[in-house]
Amino acid sequence: MKIKLTLSLLPSILVVFITCADAFQAKILPSEIRPGDVFSIKITGIKTAGPPAAVLKNKQFNFNSCGEGCFIALGAVDVETRPGIYRIKLHLGKKMLNLKLVVRRINFPTLFLTLPEDKVTLSPEDMKRVEREAERLKTIWKTASDRLWEGSFMLPLENDISTIFGTKRIINRKKISIHKGTDMRGKEGEEVKASNRGRVVLAEELFFGGNTIILDHGHGIFTIYMHLSAFNVKPEDVVSRGEIVGFVGSTGRSSGPHLHFGVKVTETSADPVSLVKLKL
Image 1 (tube, rainbow, N blue to C red):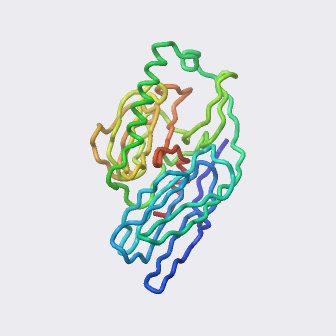
Image 2: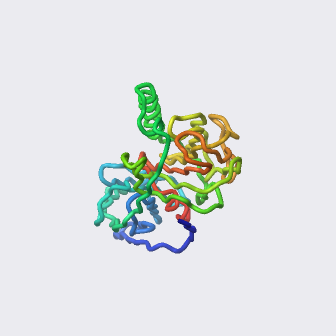
């Protein structure tokens, strides 16, 4: 399956809130998304000093400045979110309004994979390792550091996508998992670039991901690069957008050289392509 990424103008919803003393605009882009998509909330014309606050299904958004009287935040919905209309509660001082976010239905594809049995049915020792790694990653995802990202995000490779986000994977005809990243074709040793400016918070070998790099871009946004053959960075390095962080490989649970590219937005696994499409 060959998929090409095209960047286009996405639909948005614009809400204008006006009182006799103040006026501001709240814009969601795009206003219609698919399960797993990333979206932005941009507030302009703010007269107060403090940032706005917004909540969707008990999850807070992290707003940061985008100029005078301007604030922006990124959010995402889980891949298992049901289609429907959702309300984002926006608070600006004593003012409050609801923004509408539409999640539309999508039928994700199904993929059958064959892998070595020891990568599917885990030994007790491997299971303990996987659980330890999962707990460590949860701690990373909960971090909300200062903003480092600058402008729009980019794909780390310029190659075709082989497996899209949300694909239902049936492994060895018995184990079912949802693909919470984007697999990109690549040759062994091909350069992998940082999607945006960020700090390296992990660069080590994991059971499933093999040689894995995680970049913290600030405000709960992370990008993940898996199955690498080698690293070009170390923890605590701050890298620029487009900087080489590693090289394509087939380490961990992998059937051949490729890059698994993942995104986390406030602890939610999100479609990397939807993040790259946003004009930030």
